[in-house]
Amino acid sequence: MERIVMKFGGTSVANEERIERAASLILKEVEQGKQVAVVVSAMGKTTDQLLALAGEIHPNATSRELDMLLTTGEQVTASLLAMAITAKGIEARSFTGWQAGIQTDSIHSKARIEEVKAGKVIATLNKGGVAVITGFQGVDGTGEITTLGRGGSDTSAVAVAIAIEAARCDIYTDVEGVFTTDPRMIKNASKLIEISYDEMLELANLGAGVLHPRAIEFAKNHQMPLRVRPAHIEGMGTVIKEEVEMESNLIVRGVAFEEDIVRITIMYDTPYNGSLANIFTALAGEQVNVDIIVQTIMEGEQPSVSFSIKNEDFAKTMNVLEVNKAELGYKRADFEVGLAKVSIVGSGMVSNPGVAANMFDALRLASIPIKMVSTSEIKVSVVIPTTHMEEAVAVLHNTFALEQIS
Ligand code: ASP
Ligand code: MG
View (cartoon, rainbow, N blue to C red):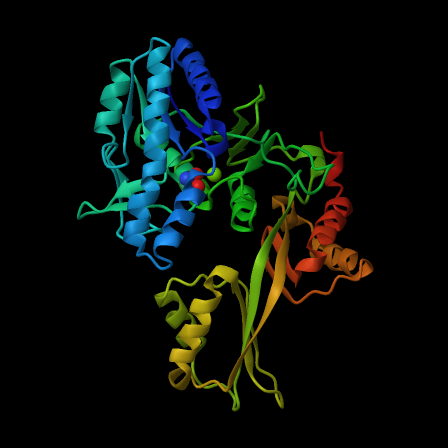
């Protein structure tokens, strides 16, 4: 019997009516002879609300306690959805991450799944029942409850799909699929029929919020087909898999953007004889994610290193630099806030030179200043002032004719 995983995001289970709708979608798959494991997020904005509540009680609560609190959100959804399915005459059982055998490392609030011991879930499926599993959470080797980071229930879904050897993993959400850019911002954005794991991974890492990056990584490593599809309307969504057809020869397949970027610049007095590794080891030790790094060492110029981080890591970063100032041996650390990153992504770039040049040209014509640049085989990112972000996305979306695909 074919097994599938159906994952429902927060908006798709935000109230009774939507939980009912999710149950109906599940029922349909069961009636078609599928064994169904379901993974759920917390209802609507529950996670945000719980975080706000915690903030009022203790502004710096430990991540262990926050994990304990936040995981309750998913438990509410799992039990209610199991009840909704049962009310339709089909056996269903809810499971916490621990009960579903989702084992993680011990890094609270950013834990990684190490193994899924899906015996209990599989037993439920084999008896004809639906297993409804809380996303976003697991348990570490000592029995502590952990969470996987915001948006992490996508990753739970893929991990469960792999563990139960599902044929595919469907991610139900409040959008019609994966778009060339955020349709809430750019009205003529188009829905993609398919996209490769690599392109989707770049887009997700670059701030397109549709899918959790770890989920795509997991799916790629195990060649688990993913589908992002709407829960609120009929629609086939977007398939994410290894190889995709070149839709109308698209070289660029998407434009991603992300606000709240900070650029840090560290200046040295004398030619830098330390190692770049020192700075980034110190930051990594505090779990700061550094993105773009630019080092300038030129004859007759003050040596410097610039790098970009997310605003949320800003205070921590400045603190690490301050505490380690003597050891790192720099003279001055500067920062610039109010920046955004805008990126173009497409596998076609590998074999089409000049894409970056087109991008820079289009931005220059629009008088948008570029602060930093980074590239990979299939993407080009620029850091620009946030005040120009929306305009830059619109310009690039046009430049690469992304409104024309249907
Ligand atoms: N409820 C969690 C969040 O809001 C996990 C998820 O929805 O994926 O981040
Ligand atoms: Mg999500």
